Length: 293
Image (cartoon, rainbow, N blue to C red; front, side):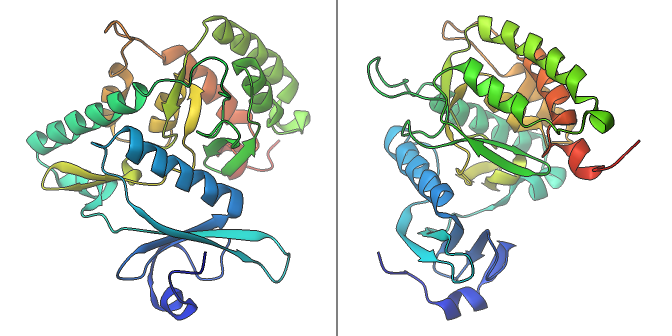
């Protein structure tokens, strides 16, 4: 498909993240939002957005207006672009500190409805391709952390997914005691896998930075590049990994319910993931302190 915006429009647009010519970027051109990334990531995000629009019509997600790809001259890589409709509102992370308690309660109620809708999407029937990874069963799984994102798979089982996560631990055992943590995490993950976590459709980055709000209501949910089928706890650990707001984190901790309405806790999974994050090569600690004695 031909590009929906010109290079001049991108150059003169308002950059929300990234910049013209960068590997990743989001640009407000005035009439649309244009996002670009490596082609496979853009394709997965477009697929996820359209899947949510079809299966969860109450969730305010942008409309995809068109997609196109460009081959980079320097390395020959394919970069995927797509244009989206502009949603009203401002970022919840920016609005939250000045919101009244009543508005915060309303926003959290909206968030609960959105999460319930996402988690009620049925997993494809047995006999079809359902993998841990992209919504279409063939897209890669993603793990986003402070030091960037890693992609792998898709994975047929949670055990395979866990093995991949452990494989991303920083290789320098003298600096990061990796051997000890690999053994510990493998033990913890084997116990977690035995719990038979169900697969749930997952946004994968439901932090305050991806919700738009206006007049105390959620008006948009954006950034679906990490969405897909994941173990049921994954949404929780990714929802709070960048949060520093106690009320939001406490609400996230106690929100989760089983299919029968009984409360579910993912505290153990959060602790295990925090240990993983301290060692994984794109986690906060390794990204911030790449060399220490």
